[in-house]
Image (cartoon, rainbow, N blue to C red; front, side, top):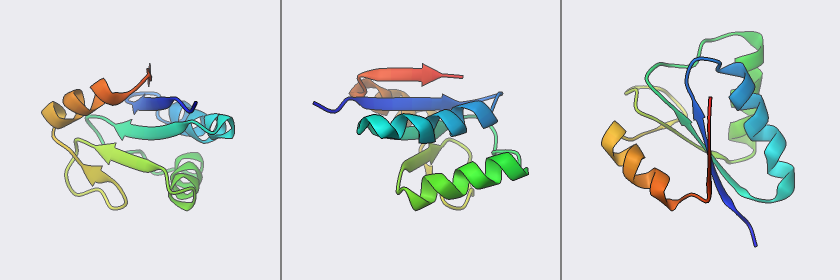
Length: 90
């Protein structure tokens, strides 16, 4: 049975984005939460974000106005996190 996994992205942005892509090989449900600031634009992050979009992984953020990510308030995110089997925080 597939697990539902949330990956929280904060300060070390590159590693959780890369890991989110890597753990998809287990056929679990992976969703990414970008918290408190936009993803820094660099070669690694841009490539990982593009791959997340290509794989149709859901990416949520509590920062308004970021293209390609669904905005949820911090309160909405905290309620949504109750739905997951595992939460990986970076």
